[in-house]
Length: 382
Image (cartoon, rainbow, N blue to C red):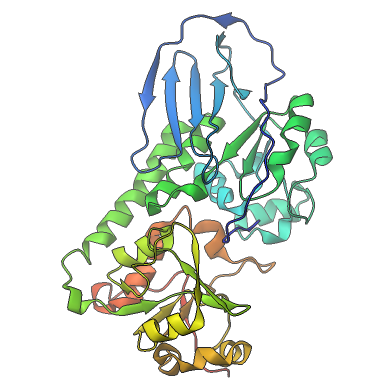
């Protein structure tokens, strides 16, 4: 993933973007507001012959909002100032984060992807088939897409993730009349909030109703799984350690984060539930050792392949009961053919699969016939 699991600081220049398409403007701007159920970062409005999309939280702490207009085929443009105008139908789009790839797959629009930065990060089988056929341009392997190549591709729109450096190219894309839409899905902390961004992508593709239907399938699956743990008593919930060491700092999900909330929904007692934060928190080893020495499980232990490799990389890991007892789980079960972890691509869109994995690990009796999808238990090196 153009990843992505870690959060970054940004030094941003925000410029308005406008489409090159010239359309007749009209003053009637009556709309029906469609408020997302879980996502807080965007809103949708449906008008006669158009959609208005507002991205309210493009990145953590942002005060700037972005407004986009999506015009139906053969419709006229209402008056108003927009950061980009997109004309339907569309046939060529560019994405910049692997978390957006499942949107196209689920909506049957994989064939509209014409370019992406660092193709090796993509795990989707449908997209890899098109890559192998030479139908998707590699925009480079650096921290952002190559703007000159983006312009040469002449897409109907490009979706920019605010976890990368592509924001700095907005002025250049504006001058080249390339509509750019910012995706701030990672700011969402409700597990279903991130998945709900497929509705925004659906609007941009002229495929909102299917996007809504696909999201509702995921929503129903998640809520049904959540019910399984809703009546568990506190004493029935195993304690869970998460995170890893890097240069003597222990990085773990904050208690208000997406990952911590899924652990809670899975019926786990997160050992750092009092450590506030919506992203990654930093802890010292002594604190973690004192708090988590006897934790029942260790979930989210980076991408180690086995316990021996994990222990060799950081001998202090061996002190924890979860490591000693082989109760360590990582999200490494599924990798794409070029090495990308499917968890980082599909996980945002399928939190229901993550939730079921965690329930299976923590409370296997609740899902007796379920097989782990993303996660796998680490064993001794064979």
